[in-house]
Length: 361
Image 1 (cartoon, helix red, strand yellow):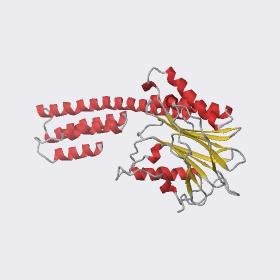
Image 2 (cartoon, one colour):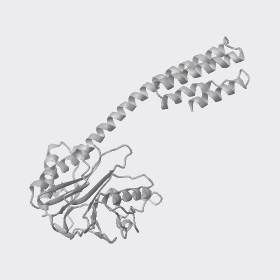
Image 3 (cartoon, rainbow, N blue to C red):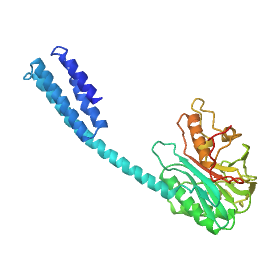
Image 4 (spheres, rainbow, N blue to C red):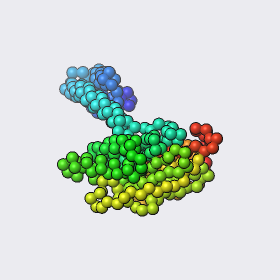
């Protein structure tokens, strides 16, 4: 575009009377170059703009008139300003790149990607931030292989910002410790509750630390085709069977989210569900179930209807298809973060990854 502006301006100048000038195009060329090119490209464009003014003045034989000098001075000044703007933009870009590296490092430290195979199970996870350029927010997931089986947590912290990220770090840290030490899933939930309560006391105000966290805890014991769940006010997980059937694993007794013990204390109850070979357990946050349709804002995304009667080769393909479907549903404008975690139990004589079509109706 800078070159096009210079060419158009030069052609305009030499084909029109001297009282008509293309100084505006000559001035715009280095400013455009400052936004897209480096320092050398911006300097070359500025020099080209000044040269174009000199050539057109020479062509019209007006190098010493006040109009010619004024036009030359204007274009030269804009070219110098373009170099200053280019330098500022480059520094801002370097700071932004550094911030993105720091954000990615923080995400890997606070919310590491689980291994693809844990305790004989296939695992996949996705984190989709609603804000463009963001890497981590208030949604969380973690998977741990323990002496009691593979244990999983998926949660959603109230609020956003640094307070939510701090709560995510507290919950994941407490889960990893409790999952190894507590013999029961109820004990793990109790440890998470106490960890949030301790951290809340250390903070000065509610704004400094998020007040509660919805979460679902899962335990898949070794040698048993079942899954145990403790649901603390979180969207119910889905169990996708190998034949396309789907079950919503709703808790028998609804419970309050973590961090709301001041409203009442009730013992956690574990619900046990079959988890046969070939099935996939899908856990998600409300960023999935509350995703609004782009064309009809009152139409929420229903994962049960979207996934029922569909077969996926593995957890990665399931989450890829789910993320793409949500983007189509929302038109790419999600309003909340979304965390997804899928755990598959391989079927009999099934290889680690089936190589078939991504989605089979």
